[in-house]
Length: 380
Image (tube, rainbow, N blue to C red):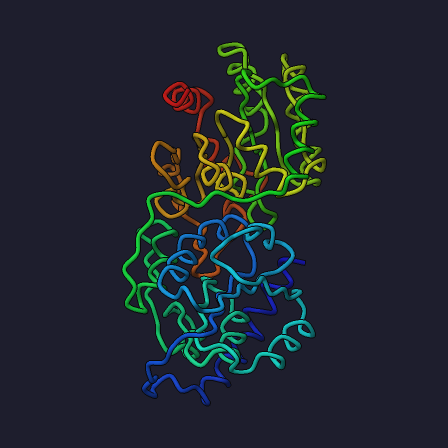
């Protein structure tokens, strides 16, 4: 489904953007008005959604009296739960009927729209119809639909790149850390009971490990056998307890890791057993996070726990765990294609080496267990 959506967006969306650009007011002078209604668009990745929160805070601080809405999908909406920078989360489904319904109901209803998607054409199309003034990135045919175009700087962290969209409005704002993610009292109660039932106490050294990755780029995953070896060693050294986390479909992966472990009795598999907001609270109960370049990694960094992310197809300079003391471990210099993931170009491939070759995932395989252990010892 994800690949089909991207295919349609790239080919059909590109054509629509080119047609709409003929009617765009991009060259017209936009009068300065009071922004009473603002819409930010962030439709997809959970990790990227976590990284846009500082930009949303900048909007709120500079337009305290405006109604600020966010356009999202069911996939990432929970990231905005309880966020005081937002008045309302507007939801669409990833299908043409839902998109058209939103467009028809919101034509030019927003004084300002900030398109925070790095590549999607559909977000630009929605923004074009919904906003009187539209801000977005300057690459691709989608850029023709914006009034203000911002260069996507792929040499800096995505937090700063999202903030660049806000800076284009004349707003000076920076962020040294991410914003904590919210959860309900019921989420807290559920996790507290879950931990108690699994005999985890407040003084235990608990490490969260996320061995999976989003379906669009599984090549980001460090070999599961190495996770097994790593977790066994950490348990031996620090008498730690490991909480594995992941989406329901990753339960099999975690079971495969546990099957390889000698100390699997000190591990818990939460995949499919907790929801996203419950994960937000669970992270706070952990002392350290270790995992691939994924949404879970950004959640951990946002919740203020020490975070170690493993990188190969992507660069930690762009998407590493944001915040002081966090580490993005990258050893992809042995791969001629790294970074092969360039989100702003729509490039999120599987490994470019053949799956049956020794070079498949060579950038991730270049990270040894000892490499990760050395970083862990610095952080504990």
